[in-house]
Image 1 (tube, helix red, strand yellow):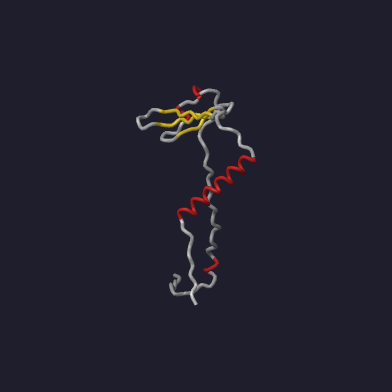
Image 2: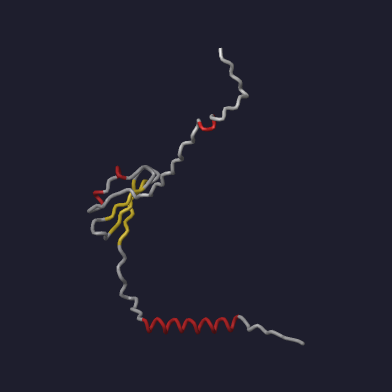
Length: 125
């Protein structure tokens, strides 16, 4: 029968348990659910995760469909279209831009000078 002394110090015991290397956490990259489609009819509800949404860009990139679940168990589709360029807005060239900046600068100077009186400093000896 062997005698085990619990107070016995074993100098080699500290080397017995070598710590394991810590694993680096895997960082997940967020991704969008969905796929490129030819028309909205191709986007099916089975491709939308429950409680989430999926993005379906049209093949020619003229529209993007976002299909999502509603609270009542149905799906809804939101369509995003490219905005048309407005012909009402005039083209502004560099000289006109500088002129407008100078005009705004002078208006700001006038506004500041009329609303904030200049500071008077008195010096006495």
